[in-house]
Image 1 (cartoon, rainbow, N blue to C red):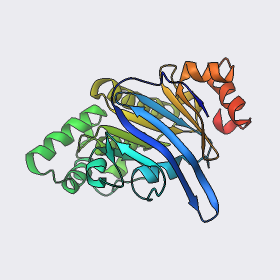
Image 2: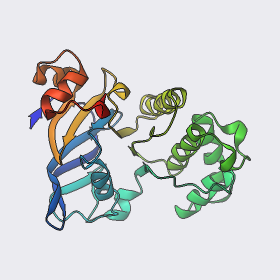
Image 3: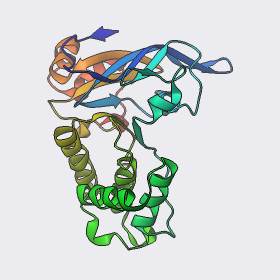
Length: 256
C-alpha cells in the first residue's frame, strides 16, 4: 500500500487499523487501515464492490469487526460502542427518513433516540435545517422534497446529536448535477465551520478536491492513503483519474 504521511493534522476523528472482513469464503476487506483527521474531508474512493459499504457497516456496528481496531474520537467501537457511536453521524445510501413526516418531525424523532427532547430538540432542529438551507421547509412533508433536498434533510438529521465524525456512503447517487454540488458544498462547509471529520465514500472522481485527503480502496485493499498531491506523485500521474487507473489497473467509466 502506498502511503503519504502528510495526510492531515489534528486529532483523529476515525482510526481504522488492520481490519479485515469476510462473508463465508469471500474476503471483502483485507487488512484495511486509514485515518480521518478531525476537521478534514477525506474521500474513500473505490468502484462499486470495492468494500466501501462493508467498511461503513463495520464502523457503525451493523457488522462486528473481529479483526483489527476501529476508533471514533479515541473510543473503540467494540469495547466502548455507546461512547463511540454517540460521536458518529451517518448518511447511508438508502433513505433513512420517513416520507410521511415533516422535516421537523423526522429530526425530533432522531433527537428523541439520543435522549434529546423539548426545547433543546427544537433548537437543534432549527439549527441543523438552517445549516442545510431548509429551515423554510421545516413543516413540509419529506415526500414533497426533491431528491437533493431529502438528502440534505438526512445530513441535518445526522447532526442532531452533534457528532465529531460524519460518514456519508455514496451520498450523491441519483442526484442531478446541481443537487450534487449543493450536497457536497454543504458538507465541505460543515468541515470548515464545525471542524467535523468527514469520510465521504464515492466512485465519482469529480467529487474530489485538490485539498482533500483520499483513500483508494480496490477489491477490499487500501492501495493509497494520503493527500491528493501525494496520490499523484505516488502514481506518477497528472490527475486523479489517471492515478486511480494506474493504481487499480481499471479503465472503467464508473470511476470517471
